[in-house]
Image (cartoon, rainbow over all chains, first blue to last red; front, top):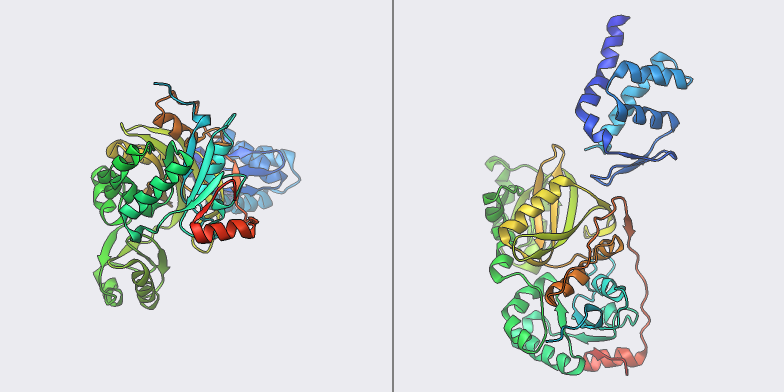
Length: 96
Length: 357
C-alpha cells in the first residue's frame, strides 16, 4: 500500500520539479480562466483544478498540497491521486 | 528650421492590400497614424492593385494612388512618386511591403530630394536578412535557424532521407511561400508549385515542432530595439497568417531579437518571426523589414510604433512607448469597403482617388 502510494506520488513530484517555475507565471482568475503570459496559451479549469493550481504555485510540498485538497473538497485519496496525475499531464501541454 | 509636429504631417503608406487571408500592413499602419492624438495631418494610401481596399477607405486615407509594379522598374516608381508628391506634398513615406523595400533603398536619395523622408535599413542590412543568407549570418552571432539546404532539383526529395533529412520538412521559396511536406510526393509538388511562382532555388528546412512567436519593434540604427511588442498567433488563415493573436512576454524571444538588432544595427521597423521548440530553444524563421499587419495591436497597447517612426524621422523626442500588457487579444475580421462608381472609375483610369473624386 505504501509502495503504491509512493509510486503514485512521484508523477506530481516530478511535475513540480520540472514545471514549478512555469506554473508561477500563470495568471489565474477566480472564474477558472488561466492565461500563460509567456506563450499565450489559455485554458479553463474547474474549482478543484483552480485550487490545485493555486497551491502548486505557492509550494512544492506534494503532501501539503494533497492534504489541503482533501480537506477542502469532497474527494477520496485514491481519486485525488488519479486526478492529480491526469491534471498534471494535461497541464504539460499548455506549459511548453 | 521649424520642424512640424508629427500629428500635422502628410504621410504616405504603402501596402493597402487587405485580402482576408494575407493582408498587407498598410491599413493597420494608417489606423495607428489616424488615431494619434490630435491628428491633423494627411494619410495617402499607396497600392498596386485597383482593388486594394485601403485606397478607398476614407476613414483611414485621405487619398489613394496606384504605384507601378516593381517589374516596371525603379525609374517608373520614382516618376510616380514625384507626381504624387506634386499633388499631395508628402513629408514621410512608410513602405510596408517586403518586395518594394530594396527599390526604396536604391531610390532613397532621389526620394529625399523630393522632400520625402523614409526610415529604412541599409542595403547590406536588408540583404543579410534574405532567406538564402540569413542562415549563415545569424549562426555567426549565436542565433539558431532551422537546418537548411538549397535545392535546385526535385530529385533531392527522393533520396534526401539517405542524407540525414527526414519527413515532414519545410519547402520554401527564396522570397515567399512555404509549405510542409510529409512525403517525397508532396515535397516534389510543393517544389514545382513554388518554383513556378517565385523561381529557383528552393530552400528546404528541417521542421521545428513548437510554437511560432513574433516580435515587432523599431531599430534605431545604433543597435537598439525600441518599443517591442510580442505576439503569439492564436488562429491562422490558410496562408498561415495571423487571424487572431495575443500579446505575450517571452524573455527568450526578446533576447534573440535584441541580439539580431544589435548585430545588424537595424534601422527602421521590423518583425522577427521565431519558432520556440518543445525544449525551449528558439529558431529564427524570418526577419521582415517592415511593420507587420498586426501592428495595431502594438498601438492598442500603448506602443504606437508608426508614431515613433515619425518622431525619429522628425528628430523629435520619442513619446512614451509603454510596456505592452500581456494577454491582449486581436481578432481580425473582413469588412466591405463601399466604393462609388466615380472613385472606382478614377482609380481604374488614372490610378488615383483624391478628396475631390
